[in-house]
Length: 226
Image (cartoon, rainbow, N blue to C red):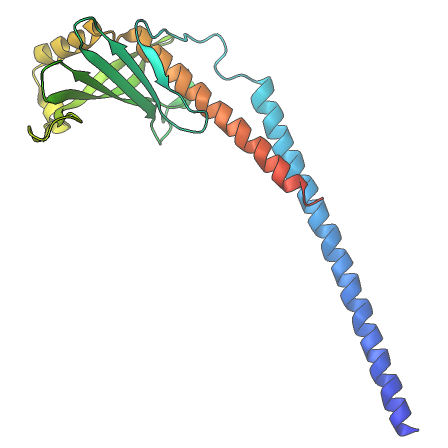
């Protein structure tokens, strides 16, 4: 009789424990579903906002002139343009956005400036002249290149002529006439205001497109929880 009562008591305790666990599980399940729905709603709202509010509408898109867009992968941050002259000279421009947004973003058309490397290869020379540039907004609808450093780097076919870098502080104290002449030299190679406008516009649009694509992939992944 006592053993039977003990067994009945244990069974009752187990039944109560099972009911409580089941109840908690259902509550947790409802909570997770509700949380997921809220998250999805926020993601979908953000996607709709990005699509319905084009940030770079009616901006100066610029032009690449005689350059050709050689590399522009939808998943990469950078782009590469190349220009070839009849003499065999080549000018290659690689660019990507700065990591940090511009502090006074409200006063600018684009939220980020661009970093660009302009490489000039002369036929018959073992080294390449590389300019490190910052592409910034100079007016309401214009951008331009500002040289921040320069160096000579070995070409892929050369084992001599060691790299020589002299930039940064150097271009902070360089003679303004020389600095201006170097900028004009780059302009003569097609590195112009039109190209600067293209780089900033294209790279900022590219980043926005990548953000929207990331949101859509996030939406697709999260929705599988429902």
